[in-house]
Image (cartoon, rainbow, N blue to C red; front, side):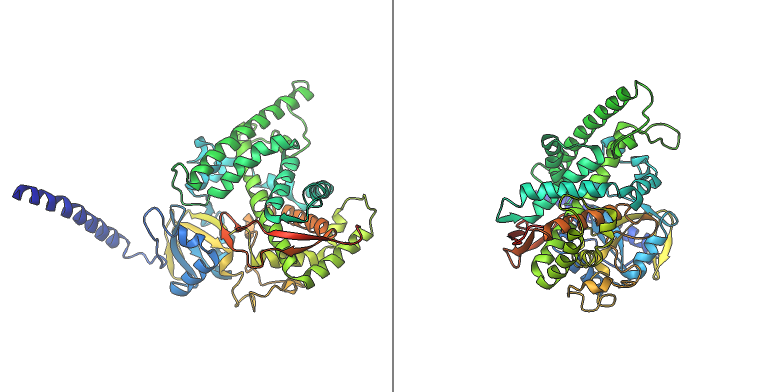
Length: 482
């Protein structure tokens, strides 16, 4: 019996002793490094749950408790430093490729990418020069997309909105943005083919920012399974397109393309080799994530604010009707029309400030550096966030007030309004998102005034803010159709 108790005490004390020893060694090794203050939360879980309950509150509370400049936390299984304020944004944006490089958490990579690429850097994942994306997404290149966006918006509203008295704006906005991305990026227009991508892609976006626990039934497990299905379907589309283009060119090297996918089939990497099918799939997935989740959320919350604020809606309607009345009823929107939507874009920007679709972005430090008196060691992960500036009264007086006039003239102070990031790595899809939001606004306000059916609908956070009931609205068609 005595031997049993001695063994029991030994088994209890030894692990505790080793834990204390490891802690002391770690503390001694890090005592001379003045890393940012903060908490990393629970093992494995980190502070994911607290962040999910409200990113804005999460950031504000920790800025007040730890530091107004930078604090540490743990999200998505990674310890990281969150940089705050306009100066924090500026520092990260302007030191890209000098002190930091873009980075995704393993949890995101596992959901989105082929297993062969999970351990690779983001540059290796795409094998696509960033200049290519800027070329295909710059305003001059996007002008040709405007009539297509307008035509699809008209079709979508006639089919999904006009036959109904009440609709859920969020799922319909997601349907429009995903259908449009499939059409513009890959010329996929068959509803059955789109559904093969849309259904599993919904699983990916719902779960890729959840706690990275891959057990059956978890959101993250759904994201892993959905990502696999999306990649398989994209590979099928890519292979069919490659064969089609080769046949069109009489089995010679591909020499042209009608959409983004066809152009990607022409791109060569730094070694002069054509991109592999997996590399093209990685790039398409990245574009779908950027153009689908954030843009559909942006559209949804613009509609939410138009439904809540009749005086704002009235001014948007006035501007959009002036544009519509200057055109024939069947004449599609043009670049020149978009440039006239100044007040509408100010409204959209204020909506992006109040309810930003994206929470921020990750970086990885490639060397030791200091910021605001704190040391950031090489290999540490960092995060810039919209929530340290967008509703900060230091930058936006009376921040809860919806006021589009903030964006008149020179607009907000630099590095304070950052829904698309900033610096060399500002989101290349910013102009694409602007066009899509404005085209959809134009087509909705010309037809309806919106009435919210749940005045205080709860907003939850997945990858982006989500109205928990889908933003149900009642449609009030205008007496005279334009």
